[in-house]
Length: 400
Image (cartoon, rainbow, N blue to C red; front, side):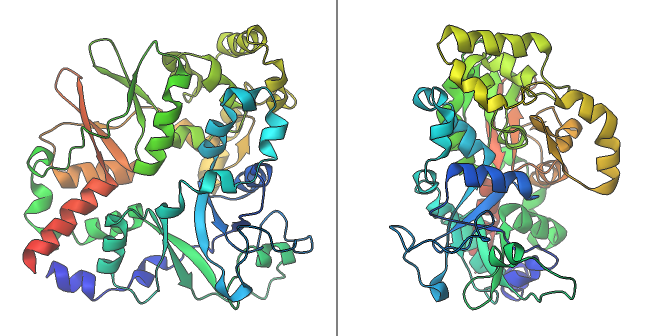
């Protein structure tokens, strides 16, 4: 039944109601990517090997350059970028000393590691094909969608960053989309979803990224980059290995570039408090500034702009988060997004939790992972969407 269900449905079924991707060109800069991420309501911005760009579409197309040799009828998405990519890049010592120059770097510097995370798929491909593509490492499937220009006037900028390949537009299909679909059809996979996760080989203790509470937050930089690849997070543990919290890509993607200064100067525990939903405490803001001066990195303070990037968000949240919640808006101001107010605690489960319970936890909190802890709080592993999909794929293979 499960095989028929997934074979009989096309990946385009998951595209209904999805907005068209906004794009950047591989020749754009990190400053362009930063501008785009602040303008779109999505965690990732797609990067293409052609000249269509959200931030440069009102300029004449630049001459063909290295890495941008695609013909207009062979435009392909070659990667994706998020705020955390830029934050990690800015945290490098050589970039903190000259952040403006760092932001002039081409985004191609960051795309090479992410090219395997996106994959094109035709809309008539089956959901089985989508699961297979994700099993091979894709996290974002790029699917052509049917779209029409509405009667309401659209700007040239808007259209140029959406349409590719003879006026085709595209959308993301993510692992979350597939997991949500599987949850809606969970009875077809019985009894596997009701089984404890410690019997399904779904708890990952190999790609378990963690730092100690008192470690420098900068020691988590490489782990944060890996967590983007694995769609997980970086745990913070005490000296006894007990789970304290996390440095979450979700939270950092909701910040602006100024949080790189905190990541470069604070401890892991202090950073967790800094990016928590109450806003950064003034004493931590002052510590960041003092440590930058001590390290002769005063030039990095230009990331603050009007110096609102580190501390101005808390008053904004208290006055407008309710309005944003009711309107569905996701405004970014200062360093943070209003959506962060609704989730600051890490999501945990236990080895004996059922797979379906863990799926519901992850989907209800809009995260792609759930930490696994013992009764005493000791961190033992993590369950990710990738691991869940592997379980369902093995279930399907056993039925063939």
